[in-house]
Length: 502
Image: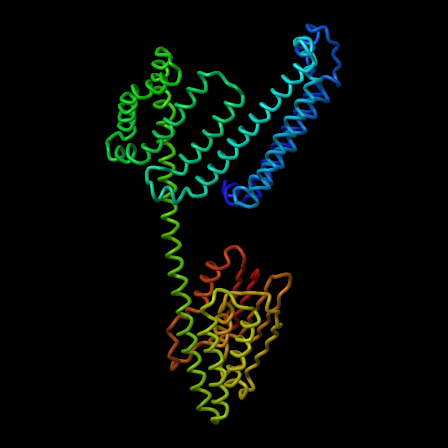
């Protein structure tokens, strides 16, 4: 339905294939069905009948003319008139179409209705009658096409502006607008098919009453009945009372159209039964379904709000955690080394802080920027470990093109955790970091030694939040598109991350 409303090309395809299918089937049945009734008319006029000359080719030409005329008028002329483009040219095309249809039908009917020559005094009288009828038929076809165009564009306007209409008129629902459009189309088809008068009158009154009852049920009847002890029964009773009160009005409308009192009274009673047994229960079911849908949407919005709040909270927790580790590093470096290395550490810290303040707030960044941040962090940590021969740090990180995007600060918590728990200046320590991307899949491995915290370490009794946070962020940002494997022994810690990146 959304494609039909918002994509004009989609509607054009439907119309094109629908009219093409009708044309193909018409030609097929034209060739496979023998016109016994038409042959009888020729026989009554003592005129010889030839299948292809008097039936197949004349009607085929008529069908082909109507098919081509519909394509030109529906896909070229009417859209331009709607947009107010070239109105004079469009009017001329309509007049030409009228003339061509009249001439083609008049000419072909001299063969398809050849039996009429025996009914008129002269050939000229026959030609005059045939062409007069053909041009009148051409005018009737153009009039029907105009009605079809009005119904189509009016329906599209109502459906595309249903939200605005419903906001302005609370009693009107989108379902009611769709039903009204379908009613207009069905009435048009009944008129074309030349249906029985009673059927047309009944459908012309019955369906609009059903739409009005449906709208009023949604707006007033059902909401008022819900607080009752037996809401459905209360709703049906009010609906029945309302329909009984409307019997005189419905009967009067039927009398004005049919001028038959008996038929009008019977139709008014049938309308009550139809609305109570079909329209009222259908409105109740759809209303309850809408209530369940609204409740589900409310719950989803609530869960989404909680997830967003959790995500923002997790994101905010990363920065203080990193700052704590970074300041400890600068403090240790300042004690062990001279001011030159300290200034280098402060410079790298500034680069990383700039990254965190500017790009950490974005939803996606190039993977190359995330890798640059990782390399800065590793270099920053080397400032305090290069002087120790017991510490071995290795990293193999492939540089990636800017076309690959990733959520910021997803990889650094694993590296932070490795340096936090894997480095000891008193014992042999090692950290190994590898990163590569193959077929839009990122493989990230961190392997480090593990050491117990000393008694004087301020974080000895504090549990880190980095890995926990990053797991929750991966669950929120990449559901079903990541895998985290963590293995831990008494002396080593291993993390393997597989992530599908865009």
